[in-house]
Image (tube, rainbow, N blue to C red; front, side, top):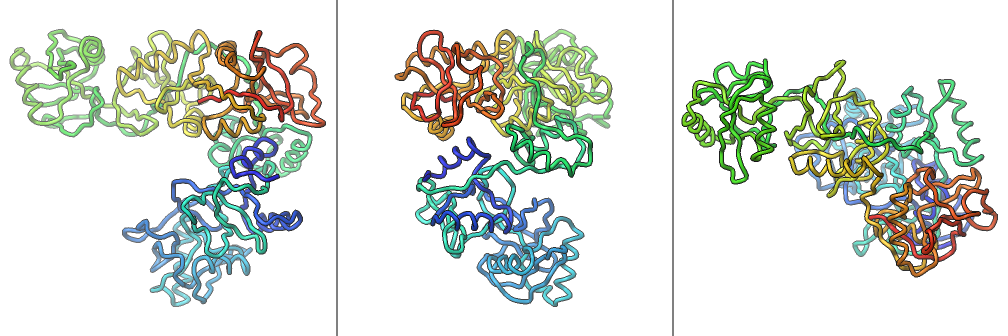
Length: 628
């Protein structure tokens, strides 16, 4: 079966796990044997080019420690060497001596000069690989060996290199087996990789070529660390792909073989009961407590200018006021007059005494915010207004405050929207923030609670899955950009609107796109993933209604959904990984075991009538709906 790289990836993900990944020479030898048995010249593997160069160890270990020399790396070349104990990037074609490690993890100095690629091949053929340096102790050991071999003033290759290639299954493996002269990006569009005949080394090639391919089934990795289910889920997302799903008798046996090595009586699976949604009350946002107090402006401006009085701030309070032209920290609960600025950036003195929080609310409701002071001229103007208002000998609130909160996306925004009496850090561990129903103001809360959350991209996306703050942060990183940062009154209102709609009925913010091309289910999935996001999942009455409105325009009697059947488990699953909870099957469809003897079954929605769901062979060619 010949496919282009994208089609091959889609096929492998649907029927197996992913396109093949080679993590070491053992894996590569297995691939070579398989290719030899089927007699193909080119075969796709799961490596493809990204836009981001990263440093890797030839051994596949993560890069956790570096010891670069001054002004290194300089970004010009792709291989690393050691000189006088420090690391330097050097042209890979240069010839240097090098150090391997063997099966006993002993270091072997090779007193031959070779290019980095030749040195790598030598180490793999005669030992294990080029040396990896994981900490300062290993760096010192490497330096000692080089000194013993009288090469201290020469460059010596180690296993660090830089490239922009990534495996389809997102694994961190940095194993490479390029043919000589590859990768060369001939024509400027060779962004995918084939393993070719003869020695079965790799060649970069355009992704639209049609070649056979190799899929891999799930690789099981036992993590012998004791964690909660939520912690385990996050760990797998960060370091591998996902907690294991047992979707067949064969997978059950594979898992049984692995768990025999476990140090506990049981191990976590990726199985959770998750059919029913609660009305949204608490929603994670991207604010968390740090260990460092910093001063901020209520407006969100950076603190570039200060004019503290003598011995100020004294660390005893969190809000700032002006007194005789200078700044003093004052308890936020004290009541003072204050100054706002309006949409014309004019200053407005308010001759009412309020706490700092009340003053902030007043300014935001009636003007824009409490005043910000960015330079000496603005400080003098503020002082002049206070003089005119005859408050020179009194404290007057301005928009400066201190806290230890930070946004998940590292933005400097100091916008806050706390509920009355929050943050209170009850119990001493309330280090994350939710937006609460009713007024949608914020409260601090322990980070291990399970709540829905909002991701931000160019728009706000409400994720109606209950996760801890850490899980929500990882989810947003993987699927969107980041947990939402509320950096203005306008953004706060946007968040309120999203949550308000969700409180009464589940609402997807994805755009639905009807594709009036007749494709198989697998081709439809590949099309959606290449041009949009994915085939649509229908997980609520509201989504059923929305999709029903769209399918009326279809040119086929039914349209493909992102719904597929696991025959061995008699279970229907959405492409987003969720089990079917809400359902709208036509009579005789979806409830009885499917006959998959001839062909896999997939889910479609009828274009007319009540838009029931039906089970069809995956080779049927239909219109389909993508989400965007």
